[in-house]
Amino acid sequence: MRVLVVEDERRLAENVARALREGAGYAVDVAADGQEGLYLATSGEYDLLVLDLMLPKLDGQTLLSRYRKQGHETPVLILTAREEKDWVVRLLNAGADDYMAKPFDLGELLARAKALVRRGKGQRFPVICVADLRLDTIGRTVRRGQRDIVLSPMEYRVLEYLAHRCRSVVTKTELLEHLYDYNWEKFSNVIEVYISGLRRKLDDGHSVKLIHTVRGHGYVLRAERESS
Image 1 (spheres, rainbow, N blue to C red):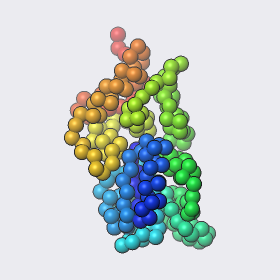
Image 2: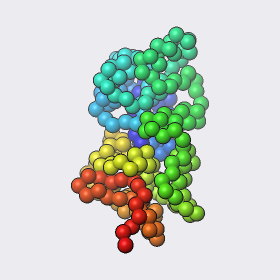
Image 3: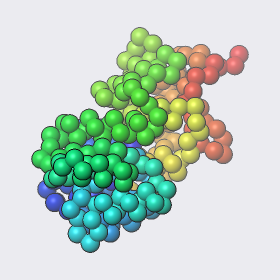
Image 4: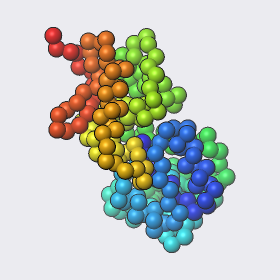
């Protein structure tokens, strides 16, 4: 998953980004003002926006309003120093999905971020099951049948994204855009390498295969019995 943090307080932005990277394995981009934030939000592919309100160049509420008017539906978590009821109502009516009042606990922010990402993908619960595969998005653990599966951090991220899009074909470009931050050079066969590793760890020895390549289109996670 990929998150955009728009926050002008450098230390806070760094702490939030670190919590999201280390606690959830998300790729994170950071913008220090509203203009840069709006540009990145509308030109990149994100699964969550974490947005401060008091920003230079363009305030957070205006950014949110313009973002929603352009038709973007990505969940938005607001960071604000204000808790007045009418202010909160105004934010929710402008298209915010949740808010946190400063100062806040990074553990709570991480939990809310994960919940919003799940909600944005149409998943109500933190555990995703496909056939006998069980993926716990909170503990970041994977189990197939009675066996725990040990994945590398990037293998897990690829699998989690496919699980959120279960039974839908996901292109290589979509995976790259959602799993790497803005600075990543997307010119290699890394996705094929991770897919190969997942197929070996998840499917070897099983008649029901989960990881499939749809030639010319991308990859899909679905249960499909091997033809004899």
